[in-house]
Length: 445
Ligand code: ADP
Image 1 (cartoon, rainbow, N blue to C red):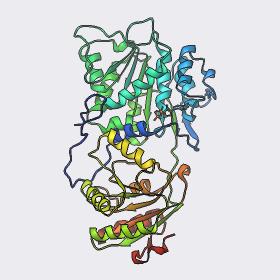
Image 2: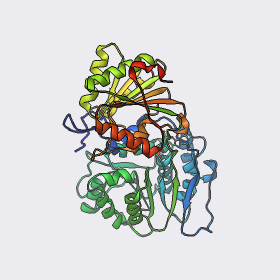
Image 3: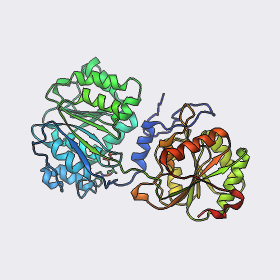
Image 4: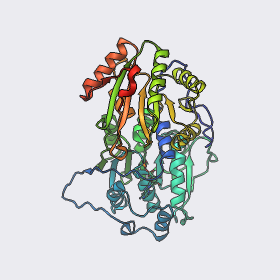
């Protein structure tokens, strides 16, 4: 249902009724993260490595030179502005480039350098003298495949002999002809068509198989089965690489099907915490009452920026209209915006052009804006059973070590149900949520 034409990303990406909770779409969220994130996220946490034979040496490199890449490939890496391998790359790259090839499962949050790592491995395994596909890379969506392809094209800037083709909707190969490109990057459906249905290349000749964004892949109907069908046609000698931002049991089971005898590398994510956050709740009688509460709070807190979370698009746009009418400069980020529009909204907000961002749950993770000092839950986060969604609460309110500044969180409570959610959240985290008398908001620190 997510048909986005061309790279323009200019179509509505989902159709929902107005009153639906505006939930995050993992593929879109991942793409947005990739586009808006500039530079590398380096975690302070250690890497965890699992392998069959703990005695076999495991190499790690501190420089790209130590990988003994082809000189033109190394030039490409430097041209991208990479000076040294990221934490995940230090450990993953020697294994990905080893002879004989080794299989790998790697999990780390987005922005830690996974794509750059497997793209480098893909490029260095290609034999450009052989004019047939040798490397397959599967991505869950058109847009994510294009993103990966663009990284590959940049890295291969000085290796024009390496040919890359997208296996995505809109790309066609003449019936009966054979594909001569070395690397295919695409979505499972198209790859299955070209490789299995129309025999346009020989899956038995594939040396490297990359499955990227496995968690998003699982989330999309039918994609996992298609991946498995492609995987079944690959030779046993093919090197398997499996990447995911998260690692739950569904991802693990999928990984086990795809990757025999893997080395498993995991970079634990920097946990968000509520340690630096002062949490309050305000009793309100109605939505209008909530609005008054926000205005009172807004009058008191003048430093920094604020994010207000609403449950539905309808509430978000109602609130933004009201606030704008009263002369506040507000930005709105919700599900009906295209990826491009969302980037524009976030860029403006990060640039300080608006002081308040009103949003729904379209971003599953907190928005990394350092100067945000106040987060307001206009509606309490709840799951589909209308129970407290503690994980979402933490993502909205919590800060990681990187953005460790103190902050204030205010929950607007207008029903017994909302109060229960608030109490459940308080109990879950074991951190007091203080009652705030809004007529006396001066007590906010
Ligand atoms: P992931 O696939 O884990 O989301 P990426 O490979 O896309 O991460 O890398 C995230 C960002 O960091 C990208 O902008 C990429 O260009 C940059 N990057 C990756 N590796 C390095 C490196 N070794 N040095 C500097 N920047 C890097």
